[in-house]
Amino acid sequence: MFYHLFFENLVDIFEPFSVFSAITFRAVYATATAFAISLVLGPFMIRKLKQLHIGEHIQEEVEKAQQHNENLSKAGTPTMGGILIIVAILVSILFWARLDQPFIYLMIFTTVWFGGIGFFDDFRKISKKQSLGLRGWQKILLQTIGALAIAVFLYLWGPTEGNDEATRTALNLPFLKTFHPSLGLLYIPFAAFIIVGTSNAVNLTDGMDGLAIGCTLFVAGTIAALGYLVSHIEIAKYLSLFHLPVGGEVTTIFCATLAGAGLGFLWYNGHPAQLFMGDTGSLPLGATLGTSALLIKHEFLLIIVGGIFVAEALSVIIQVFSYRTTGKRVIKMSPLHYHFLLSGWKESKVVIRFWIVALILMLIALSTLRLG
Image: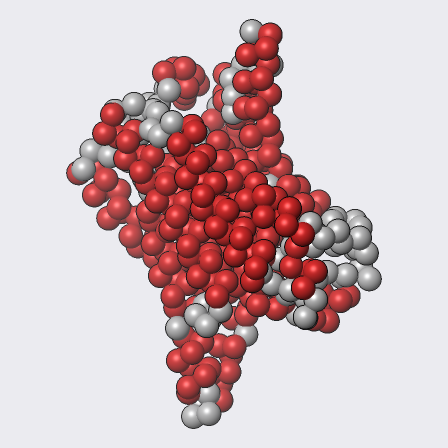
């Protein structure tokens, strides 16, 4: 909104308004706006959720481990705090994004669709007063429907480098600057898998105070930076990246907004948490990260920078497969962060060490940007 108001309509009257055309300017203030909204609305959200008795239900085994290590019960802590994140993102996007870009509406759709799935899942947990909401197949089905819609849109109208239609379904592989295989029609299931996989991976990581949102901040910051790089033709050419100006701008602004909203949420989600995001927050966070990576052709870099999410998801897959085939568990409990909790680590130690690993993975991901 500010771009159209100040740059398009008022810049001739007051030339300094041209600053609203700069991606970096709008990204910084989108971050600040989303952070301020989260920070200001946080106490109101916590009070309302408590009044409505919308509290978290914890698995018995996890609750025992947490009480043993921390002497602190999480049961009853307000959940569905993802609403706070979504509101902060959408309001900030309305202010700072270019609303004439179709990809911004794609990101809004992703946020609302997956946030809606998470909201319905959380609502069922609360109404049934248990830790299980939607059945696994129901959640996957709803996620897949939304992801396929996004994937088809990207296949038909996704960003391209210039007029090269082949780049719409091409891949950008880390360390291989000249090898860009095009998936063609296979891009649709590939993109849908990225979105659903990332959504569930973040959801599985959300089990400790500040863990999921903290790791999300590292990933969102990296993708925002990459979006800025691919939006500029000179930088993209120098780094041998696809030049995707529209996709890059939308990704930069949206991920900057996500980071601001997440940082504000972390204020209340830090240990000991006053508010949990629930599936209402974790599902759209993961889905928007996946969609953002698709918009800038850095799907495989997402695997590196989001390595914590990948490890959490793999720990669940391996654990389930091992138990069903051999009757034995590979780790004490999945997802992976619970293994360390049951091994005697305090929750705060697990979270901080996972953040450290996330930071290292961010640096590794950025190191793959080979110079031309």
